[in-house]
Length: 485
Image (cartoon, rainbow, N blue to C red):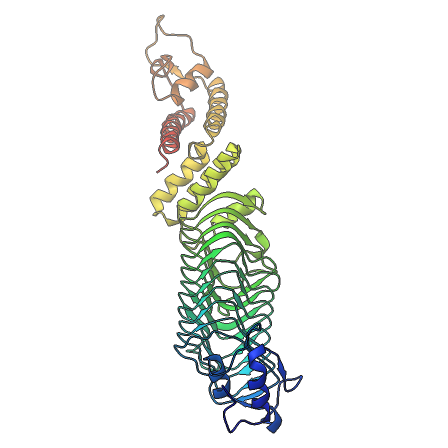
C-alpha cells in the first residue's frame, strides 16, 4: 500500500521504515515540546500496527521509533496487532490505549505519557515501560503478558488519592515481573495476580503514607518475591491470602506504614516456603502473620514491630533469634492467645529442646494471668510459686523440704504434749510429727497422739494448711500439664 497523503517528513520516514522494521531516530533525547521535525501523529502509528502498511518478504515489519513527539491518542482498543511496537524516548501527549487488544511485544521505554491503559491486554511477548515517566495510572486488569512485565527505573505519579498508580486485578505474567529501581507515588494493586516467573521489586519505592502502598491480596507468585535490597514501602503492604511458592524476602528493605496504628505488613493467611523478614531497620507500624503457613522464618529482634500478630501461624523452622527473644516475639500481640505459645513450644520440643519447651509453656500461663479475675490471678500465682504450673514439680519438693526443716526445728525446741498420757503412745519424733502435719493423711500416728502447745500450735496449724495447699497445687499442676487446654 502506498504512503497515504498528508504525511509530514517524520511520518514518511516511519512509513518507509515499517516493512523492514528499521528504527527511525528523530532525536537522541526526550523532546521538550512539539518540534516540527519530531512530530508524529498517533493515528499513523495505529494504522501501521493494525496492518495498513506493506510488509516485505524476508523481513520483520515493526514500528521502531525514537525521540518522537506523538500527538493524538494511540488507540488499538480490541484490535489485533501483528507487529512489534518499540517507542524509545518519546513524548506521548495522550494516554495510549491497548485495552482488550492482542499484540506482539510492546516496548515503551524512556517515554513520557499521562498514563497507560492495558486492561484485558494479551501480549505475545513482554510489556516494557522501563525508564518511562508516567503522570497518571497504569491500568492492567485481566492483562495476560506471556513475555513478562518490565518497569525498571520507571517513575509513576498520581495526584488523586483515590486513584491507583498501578491498577490490576487478575493480571497474569509469565517469565517474570521486574519493577526494580522504580519510584511509584500512589498505591499499587496486584489483587489476584499470578506472577509465574517471580516478582522482583528491589530498590523500588512505593509511596502512599497512611494508605495502601501495595495491595496484593490472593496473589500467587511462582519462584521468588523480592521486596528487598533497598525496597521501601511508605504505606501498608497487604499480602493477605497470597501464596509464594518460593521465598518472600524483605531483606534490607524498609517498611513504614506512616501511622503507628496502621498495618505496615498485613500478611495473614499467606503460604510461603520461606519468609525473610529482615529489613534494614525496625518496622514502623503493625505486622500480622496470623493464620499463615510458612516453612522457614528468618528474622531478627531488632526489626520486630511493637505489635505483632501471630495467632494461628504455623511454621517448620525458625532462624535469627535466641530463646529469650522468641518469648518476646510471641507476646507482642496486645490480646493474649494460646496458639503462638503452643506452636513455639512444639517447635522447641521438635528440635529436642524439651527444657525450652517447658519454659515457653510457663511463659504462656504467666501471660494468661493478665486476663484473669482477682481470684484466678491469685490461684495462678500460687500454682506458679509452688509447682511452676506442674512444669517444675521440684519446686513443691523444695517448699516441702523447707517446711519440714522449719517444723522439725520448732518442735524439737517446743515439744508437743501427749493427747492421752499412757504407755501405749508412740515415741515423739519432731521430724515424723512434722511429716504427719504436712501430709494430708495421718500416716505415722503422731498427729493424733500429740498436740502442739503455746506458740508452736500456730506453726502446726500453718503446716497443716500449707500441706493441703501444696498437695492441691501439685495435683492441679500435674492435671494442667496432662490436659493443657
